[in-house]
Image 1: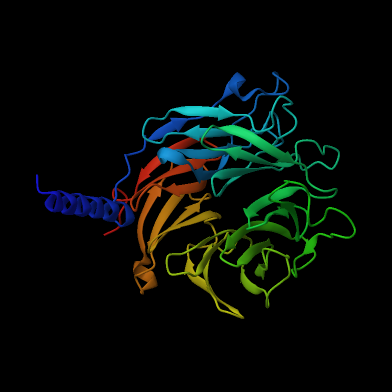
Image 2: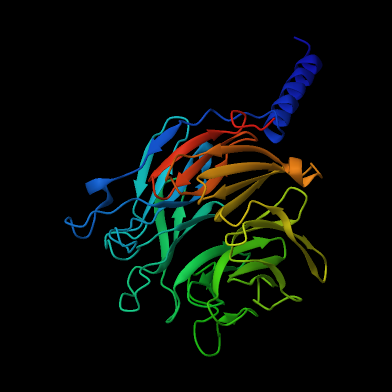
Length: 380
C-alpha cells in the first residue's frame, strides 16, 4: 500500500469526523422520551410515613454522553425529606446510577439542587433546609464523574446557605440564598478562603440589600459573574482571584434566574418575573445590557438558559415548555424557531442540549427526565 495515500486518507477521514462533531451536522443518539428517576423508598425518606418526591433540578453534562441531575428530594411541604442525591443518566438508554454525595450520614447533604461542571470534576451544592433551626445538610461537594465517587466536602461559613457555585482558577465561589454575598473555597485544599475569618471576609455584592440572593454564578475567562436575584436584578462582574468588583453592575430584569455564555461571546440572562432574555456585551471596562432583548411574557417563569453555537435553549416552567432560539436571526419575531411542551403540570426546570436539535429536560414536579426533539416542535 502507498503510505502517502494511506496517510492522506486517514487525515481526511479524521478531519471529516472532527467536523461532524463540531458543527450542526453532529447528531447525538436520540434520548428516550421519558426517563424515570428514583421514587418511593428508593429516595430513602427520613420518615417513611412522609414520602418525598425526587424534584429534579439542575443538569450537568458528563463523560460518554452521560448527564448528571441533582435531586432535591423534598417532601410535600417542599422541605428536605431525604438525603440529597445525584443521578447519573444515559439519555439514549435510560440507565441511571444513584450517587449519595453526602456519604454515610444521610443528613450531611440535603436539598442538592445544583450540580455544575468544574473541569474534570462536578460540584454539587447542598442547600439544606430554609428553616433557621435546621443547619445540617448545607455543603459543597466535589464528585468525580468518571467514577461517580464523592471526593471532598466543605460546609459553609456561619450565616450562609449555599445557592450556586462556579469554579475559578484558584478558588471555588459559592453564593448565598439569604443575601447578596459570596464565599470561596481554596481549590487545592477545599478549605474556606473568603469568609473564613475576620481577616478574610465574605464578598459583598453591590446589590440592593433587601430580598436579594445570589441567583447564579459563572466564571468566563478572567471574569466571575454573579446574578443578584430580586425584582430589580443585577449582573455583577468580579475578579475570580480576589473577588474584587470590576466596574459597575448592570440591571438585567426582574428576578434573573440563570445565565450562559452565548456563541457570540455575549452573556444571555433569563429573568423569571419579567419573562425576558437580556443580552450583555462584555467590554474591557464596561458591560452593556440589552434589556428585553426577547420577551416570552410575564407568565413564562423562565428557569434556565443554555447555549450551543448560534442557538439558545430556554425553560419556561409556568407554561411547561422549552424553547430553541436562533441568535443569527435579527428579527425578534422570527428568533424563536421551535418550542416543545414537556407535559401538563411537569414544571420543567433545566435543559441540557445534546446536539443542535435534541435535549433532555428535568421536570421538577413530574419528577422525571424527558427527551425533546426541536425538529418535531419547529414553527413554520
